Image (cartoon, rainbow over all chains, first blue to last red; front, side):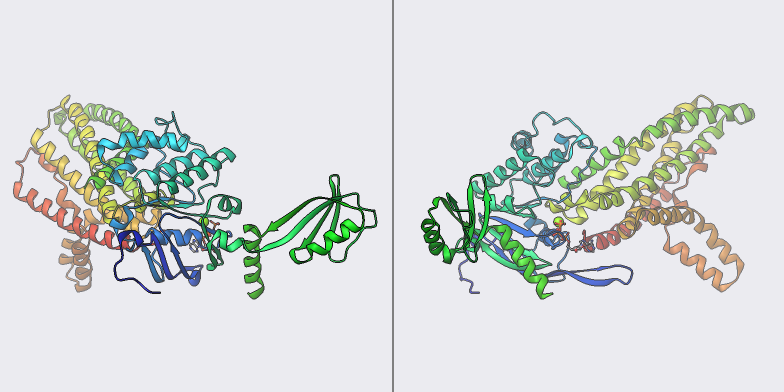
Length: 317
Length: 255
Ligand SMILES: Nc1ncnc2c1ncn2[C@@H]1O[C@H](COP(=O)(O)OP(=O)(O)OP(=O)(O)O)[C@@H](O)[C@H]1O
Ligand SMILES: [Mg+2]
């Protein structure tokens, strides 16, 4: 890696992980198990970055290292070029934990005012900022309700508001959509896109791939503590058209082609073939007197990529 | 500093809204009943004993609240994971601890004030206690309880709530016994016994320093030299406890 001599503040990546690992000692014998292994990752400013992994992959552990809540066993974690354990670095970071637990004896407004104070929002701006956030996360009219009476989805929303109250340049969200209804998920997606539009960097973890596919520019796939692949979603998925689905009508009952999966449905005969043999199949369909209704190329979905990576690790291990 | 105050304020709100202060009401009622009963039993005493017993009750009751709140304040944050979002903000771990300690001592100060005022009013029905000595004794009790808070913080950043509570209770009890124990050790003549009792005396806080109830009972003049020493002692000991708690807390992983 080459580093240019004149680094402008903007070119400092919001998140840079170099060979980061974390081991926990657990169990009666205090055996050490490596939960995150040699993770290297660079998130560039202004991107919407999805950190994907199965349950127990190490997403939350990585995120806690990004906030200085736990210290890496080895490697280097930099956030905006500094160590997140230092207070100054965290001034530019907002965080939503995975299971949001808050001081439930406070009202929503007291809670946000407290966090605005911690984040260093000037007193004069606090009330306005809080009102704006209530509106943004969809919690209008519950400012005076104590958090103990909040539903799970409302907790998630107030958690999001708390993360954004200091107007951070980097927002780190651990499973921001969990516990939300479809409307809520859409709202959170919109909030993330809006943050990106405002030039913020958003780093979020999820195991719901549709959510990631809908908003991310870049992803990293974490399997058992190791990054299996990382990059722009477009680059990871685009070049591979895996299969083509052909639907045709008017084919004779006995119609069959070697190597082609057939299934007869109400709207016609469905056939799946590899990209390479599509020409041959179409010729055979036409020769048999069939009428082609549609030809749909199937790109590799994030889900397939994810499952492939998971399987590759499973087979190797 | 603003952040420390904000954390202290939230700590105060937690204590108030946890209905701890409702037990205050119970205490006040208890005090009135006890005072009335005592008045019946000790007619020749001019009701002096009411203030005396009342101050002892405030001490014991205050100590129990201190242990309860002091241990819960950190343990609950860790167990319920509420401190994640706080520590992820631009808040230092020492600031967090300082805010908690400040909030606790402020809560205790209010408690002592309310309980003290009630006791003074009730006691005055029988015999008006000497106001200066009364306030002074209460103040030193508050200093003792604040020191006990720092003890509770140190334990609760290092271990679970049950052990922390037990240990803090132990420090409270032994801290009041050490001066007597040391004297016993010196008189026993046994080198080992003397060594152990002196070690305890110097290691654990000497909480008897803050016990000035007899000045109220016997209307003795306030000993300002002693007060100065007790305050310095509490500050130095408290600073040490806080530093130790800070070191442990700063190194802790929150997983
Ligand atoms: N406090 C802990 N002590 C010991 N091991 C832990 C601790 N927390 C997590 N682990 C282990 O670390 C691994 C990764 O956990 P982590 O919470 O980072 O996963 P995750 O990717 O966030 O999973 P999920 O999608 O379920 O939230 C798991 O195997 C878990 O058992
Ligand atoms: Mg997780």
